[in-house]
Length: 384
Ligand SMILES: Cc1ncc(COP(=O)(O)O)c(C=O)c1O
Image (tube, rainbow, N blue to C red):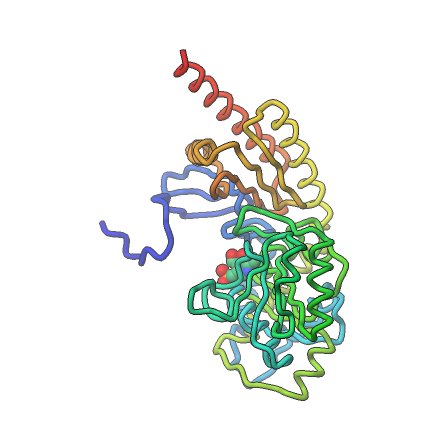
């Protein structure tokens, strides 16, 4: 039968029917350990019982009330998020996807500064549409080469409304910008009246071992976009503005209407996500697991020179293989053995939920070891 879903993105034939913590199960009830947390969203594990319970309670109270009214779930979430971000006195708006949050953040920056261009690192992904979309028609988007401090002098900072800073890049192979590079860009932006938006859609909520990825750097953002893990798989995203930007907004407000905006259900999920992280101490536990994972990979690298680089911060980890073919081979074998990881070019990506157990990390390491060893034996036999 023809797949009734429009093929907008390459899909495998695996039919997922159920999920639980770090596992997803297919239609043959085969279990996969999910080292991608869905689309890097289920930081607290799939179908987390606490989040599910809160959803069940909230649907009987209030799902959606409409743009014109206030609701306490969104206001509580706003205060909680501002506190976690160190942006007390600021304000938030809640939407559904990361792309919407990034776009609204950029719109705010353009309106508040009167400038129209957007600076991003060349490897950053911002949004599926709109101001952040990478397309030939979006001439407002300017790329700065990743970690290339010399290239800063080529940028005309006068015209830049906002630097959208992704503190750890997941779409393009897991790369972490140098603090000095970011400091130099941020200094130029500030000097010329532009704003800095931390794009925490992927790096937020403990992913990199801190609440937010920008907290590894030495600056406070004017705007923050969040998404993915805020809903642990439920679609909720947010734009956060500092108190300074919220004062500017008061002076020059604009209207932004979207049906699903500050919805009570999504915000209740966000509140439960934050309190679960706090109650279960998942930031430091995630950091410890990330450190363990990285050490295991370092040990594996000493055995297998096919692993040429390890990039890791918290539980956002990648290994780079010698060739794309080796990475492709490991990736496909891993799926067969029930491990879901990310794969792009020569890189394999691991972004598991913070609730993953060490034994599952061990299982993955052991399987990669077996696959690379098998591959090398195969190559040896071919040479004979
Ligand atoms: C850093 C970053 N920003 C924005 C987005 C867009 O979020 P969404 O796919 O929820 O629209 C993504 C998606 O992967 C992302 O990784």
